[in-house]
Length: 300
Image 1 (cartoon, helix red, strand yellow):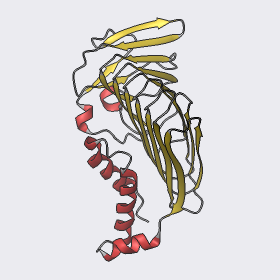
Image 2 (cartoon, rainbow, N blue to C red):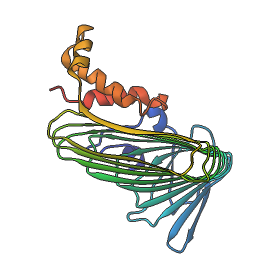
Image 3 (cartoon, rainbow, N blue to C red):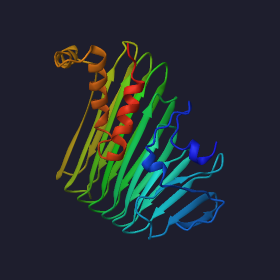
Image 4 (tube, rainbow, N blue to C red):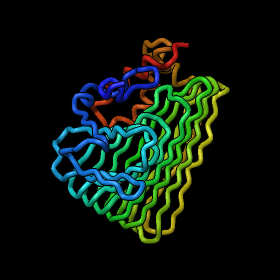
């Protein structure tokens, strides 16, 4: 499958990414020269260092060989990069001072690490509309002051699919900020497991962190195991966390039906709005994702 037809597609070939992103994708491969950065290999690890001059609105996609070695991606100081995550084994992102990374990933097996230097920002979104079985392991280290990590995920699961996401965020410097928002809708006998660990070290005074996992069950056989955890080692922080799992409240649907909607329309409107919170920060995605969710939510 060529790049133009393969990026951003489900195993069934359904396209997820909006055309405005597809038109600006640049594919990077370790066996080709690049005007955007430099490839190197140290022992069994690949390295790619972006140049500091990157055209705005450019989106990068790393297309690696089957079973690639671990890849370290460096983003220089004061540089803004957008990346679509490709399937791979291990990737580590190193953000220089005041660098920004907008990172988007289809739900898939992954092992990702992020290291943020002073003033850098990470904005991430994982999306899964009827994904296959997958497990995501994420580690984020806020190494410098005034770093910011915003991690959001949404899943719509059916059949006997099992999805697991494990997110570890460490605040290691003062005045750091993190937000972790994970939402899922489960039908049939699907299962979702969320494990979130946020640690605020003694060196991370005046930091702020929030973590929440919210889930709706459309079937009595669907199952969620959620474990949000905070480890606070400094008194001068603001930290919140929580989770909730439940079926849709019938009074909510009844209210929407009194406004002229059918029950099916009311349920779709409610569920699309529930997941929309995870991608509202990406305005170019909103219409596309709303449409895909409405198409894929069952009519029964």
